[in-house]
Amino acid sequence: MRNLQSGVLFLLVLVTLMPAGAQEKSLLWKVTGNNLSEPSYVYGTMHILCAEDFEFPEKLQSAIDETEVLVLELDPTDPKLLAEMQQLMVNPGMQNIYADLAEEDYALINGVLQNAYGAGLEQMGVLKPMVISTMIMMAVLFPCENKVTIDGELAQKAKEAEKEIVSLETAAFQMSLFDEVPKDVQIKDLLTTLGDDGKAEFEALKRAYLAEDMVAMHALMNDNDMMKEYGHILLGKRNQVWMEVLPDLFQKQASLVAVGAGHLPGEDGLLELLRDAGYTVEPVL
Image (tube, rainbow, N blue to C red):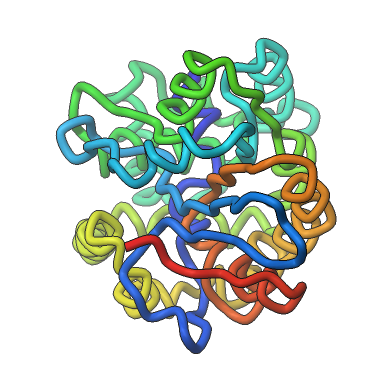
């Protein structure tokens, strides 16, 4: 369940457009200027990976050592978070919204849930599509026994170093954005992911992420139909909210901001928004 709450945004946060001048292969960016006494950093995560695919980068460890505060979308160490997420994961009125799916689509989703979790849509159908989607992607796209959450790894290191952890948003705000996306659109996107083409595209996306190649990620994911129509909500709207908070955090103390990699590039991405606000943003290679 903790893996689920940490990965609730998962693939969707990886989709956006690349800004001019951000072609370097890096997920870690140094933020200076605007009279900051110390640099801060912004890092793009993929939230969940198989343990064998992830080795904690030395440059990311250096960024932790050089900063005083870890800033995450949600703090996975917050004891109140799990209870809050559980309440938000359920459809209004405990409605099972999957009963009207085409028979083959219902069977596909139901079978994956049964195999992975021992319960199908008859029991889990009260969960919102984004929750079902995340659970299925964790089972299908990450069939490994040992999974890691990059957010969790960062939080653990921050705790060990007795550094403060700050959440950029609440679980309620995060889930409310997905509620703005029609349920049938979310379900269609899930079914696409379960197909052979979806699986192959994800493997290519993962390779691009591990190579820190956001240009390649953009090339792979730019045609995502849901993000074309709703990316301004799932990414752009959140970035704008975060930009109301980050300048004060940077001014107060050196911070490491770790958010989904898709939030970094693009005209409305964090990197460009920080530049527009007067900061110098440079890749850490």
